[in-house]
Structures are given as structure tokens and as C-alpha cells.
Image (tube, rainbow, N blue to C red; front, side, top):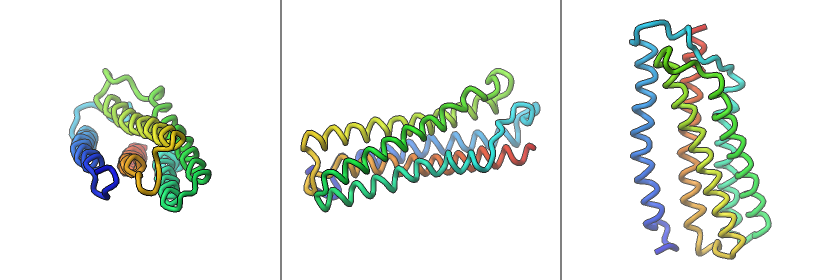
Amino acid sequence: HIRAPGAPGWWGMACSLVGNAALYASLLFGYFFLITMAPGRADAVAFPISIVEALLMALTPGAAVVTLLQASRRTALSSFGLRRGWLLLSAALLAASAALWLWPLRHVAEPSIHAHGATVAVMLAYVGLHCAAGLLMVLFVMARDIAGFISASRSLEPRVVRLWVAYTFFAAITAAAALYAVSASLQ
């Protein structure tokens, strides 16, 4: 069953990401609800983010998805060295993505001052931890590849990881857009 295109591991990840997306949607809803309805001044605890920062935060996980697609293509072609190079590049991009999302936590307003600061912190941590989890998954796939367990006929793990990283890219794009939109509207 691990060789089938719709293997149980892939479907398990897909179903868990549907639940994950529901949690994330409620986080985004809460973020926008707090901006529009919460008492107090949200602009006093605004999280300033420039368009360049937002684009970097959003697109770096996307570059990791592209590198994972290249690694998968190399798996189908049985190009060992190139596949490992693409996996290594993907790991580096996910490490950078995690840093880009987790580093700004130092600058978030105290959560006890306004709920906006708490929501921004959770959003940053949510995407950053998804990037970090993707990094661990890519490192696992690299270890499996080095051990000889990844091939054109045994490609379940890379496909599962690619699904996770693609979802992380979606979360990064929407979170960066939300953070930038609110930051720009409050300035």
C-alpha cells in the first residue's frame, strides 16, 4: 500500500490537514474579529510589518514547495545526487522560513495588554512551527533517502511531506497577507 498513489499515509495527512485548516480558519477569523470589534485601541499594539517582510515570510515556504517538487521529479528519474541536493535546499528554506516566522515573536506586544498581541503571537507561532515541523519532515526524508528507502516505486514519504509543506505555504501566504493588511490599515 505504500507504493499506491492514494496510500493511507497520504490520506491520513490530507485529512489531518483539513482539521488543521479548520483550526487555522478560526484563528484568522478571530484575528479579524478582534481588529474590528475588540474594545481598546488595537493600533496601540499593532504589529508593524513591511511589504518586503510579508513577501519574504510568505514566499520562502513556497520556494520550499518548489524544491520538494524538484526532489520528487528527481525521485521519478532516480537521480540520487540531485534529489538529495533539492532536499537539502528545501531543508535550508524551511529553516529560514521558521526563523522568519518565529524571530518576530520578540517584537509582539504583551498579550495581556490587548488580545491583538496574543493573536499575532499565535499566528506567528502557528506558521513558524509548521515550517519547523516541515523541516523535521524533510530531514526525515533525507535520512530515509540516504538509507536507501526512497525510490521511484517507494515515494510515499516525499509526497506526504510535500503535502504538509504546501499547506504550510498556504498558511504563510494568508497569515502574511493578514498581518500586512492590518498593519497597513492601522498606520
